[in-house]
Each structure stands twice: as C-alpha cells, then as structure tokens.
Amino acid sequence: MKKSILALEGVNVLSREQLKNVNGSGYVTGYQCTGNFYSNTSGGPATAYECTARYQRTFLGFNYGSSQELPGQVFPCPVGLCESLGL
Image 1 (spheres, rainbow, N blue to C red):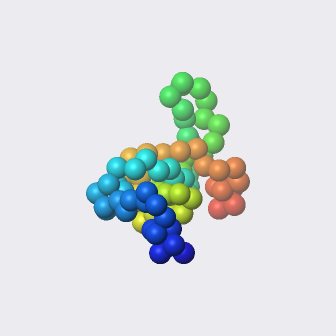
Image 2 (tube, helix red, strand yellow):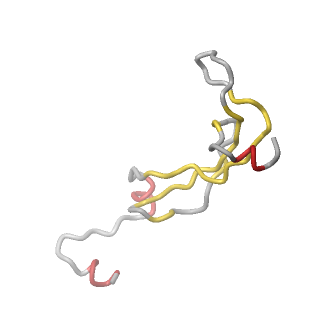
Image 3 (cartoon, rainbow, N blue to C red):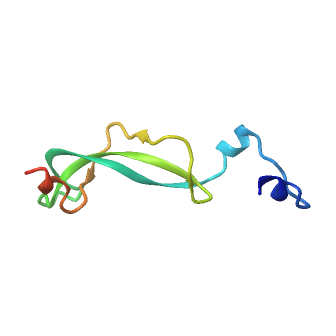
C-alpha cells in the first residue's frame, strides 16, 4: 500500500524534521489519581479528584511515538477513577 501511495503523482515524502513540524493532535491517557482534590483557577470549591496523565501524540489518526509524561500538570480525574481506588 505504501508503494502505491508513493507512486501517485505529486506525492512528496517528508523528512523526519519536516514531520516534526506537521501539526497533529493527540489525547490524554494513563490517568493516575493523586488522592488530592482538584481545584480550578476560578477559585470555586473542589468538585473532583486530581490526576496526573500522559499525552499520546497522533498523526493521521495513528499513535505517533510513545506517550509522554506531562510534568507539573494536573487534571480533573475521569468520573469514577479515584472512587474505584477506594478514595
């Protein structure tokens, strides 16, 4: 399939450096509950537990590379995650 795509008229193969500059997307994965309450920046009361997570980059709908740590960033946990851990 790759060869047939590359054989199409006008197809250019990007270098690794060019691929790094293509804006892809991704998703947050690997949530880990910290046990702390999450409070948003608006100063309202905590409404969820706090989680750390990893980020998985995607390109054209496929995972690209391995998931990366998101150091220093916390997110509200998905519903039920911390409760399933007994918190």
